Length: 115
Image (tube, rainbow, N blue to C red; front, side, top):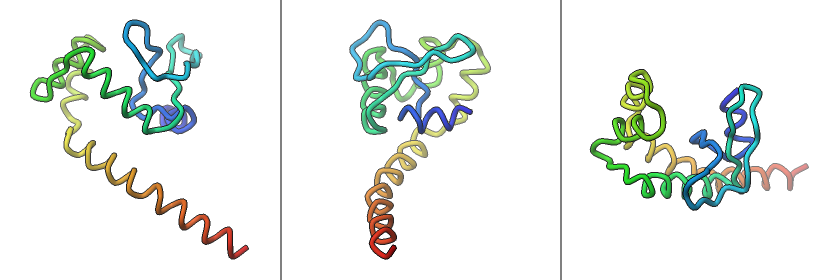
């Protein structure tokens, strides 16, 4: 399951092995379907690497779906799926996620201290 891999390898964007640009990937795993899946130290490292990917390939926010589809995956179906994702919504989701992580650790420490 892709979501499970994303959590296991700290790779929420599903970035494959990096071949041509600088990266902070720790490495990669080979998947049973022949593809690769990059591994990161943490989610923050994956977010930084995705930013670097966008910068390296000069991806513009205004033409993001077209740029990503052209440089990453050439099918029209892929461009449509990228178009369906709101960049603003993803930004808010990442902000909320990073805001909740310290809170989650605090809750867990409270629970552990009562056991």
